[in-house]
Length: 433
Image (tube, rainbow, N blue to C red):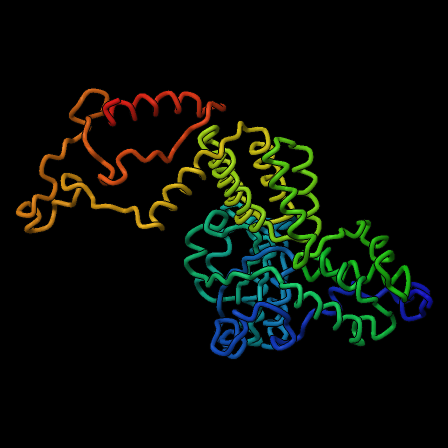
């Protein structure tokens, strides 16, 4: 089958496939169901003639520009787009002045769409305030960064904030299928094999625009789109990884075991395989956070801080940049001294509780703040450790039945060595050894 590049229909060099397939109504929008239902702010904006200002916050390719375009198209308002990457205060004011003129002369409203609005500095954002406050325009700002950190408070407080989510695999599949069949897209002029479709979905990583870009590039190479064609078009080899199958569990297992074995190179390899296959970065971050306590623990207490920071960073900036934060955490975890003393300690304590070894809380440790507690002897005889040298005082803390039980048995690895020494002295002091 000839490629679409050879087709006469391509000679006119139309707009990119992602632009041609842009939805024209809210009902054509795929995904973001939480924003598109009856009575939602977007529906009210479309159904109402009153101007409204809102921010669309979400990862790339989730439909921020599309939603702004749909609002403009359905409501018959002028659509003016400004990129915060290249525009300045002069451009913002010119767009607002033109909108005011149009509104005054014809009564027609304007949708002022500012893409990547987080790149505007304070002065540029301040220039938007009069238009937002006086409702000279329907302002829609798109951002991939947390607007609470990147947008000035006066502008944010006057606008509605809507959060967009990465598209699910089924949504991306629907986007691809529609583009294949729709006359605005490929119009049935290409055949997409099922495994090639699955590869397109994986490579998209929740980004609808990316899936259409790869599909269009593949269709230019051949009208018979196989996995190999997709690989050539996207310049990425297919990652043999099924997020719902054995490969998922095998790769995750190898990832954890490589960090546990202190092989940073191997751990980074498996991290890259998961990221390139479109694994949810939040899932990867959760596994690293668990590992930091389960396999490193007190041998390097900072490891948990690094892991949590990486998880927060991924939530904050997303992919692809978030993979750098994950990589830093993986390297730290892999090269940290190892200890499983924490997980063994809580495991042993939980085992005792499950088998009924609970016992009574010693009377001097019980809550003595409520009325009548003293009459029951609660808190009587409690010794406040801060009143004693070194903040230590010998008294019973565990239930009598568990007085001699040992849960935390530290190793001598890394930072846990001095902890082990200190804990041995404290335990001997408290238990009278």
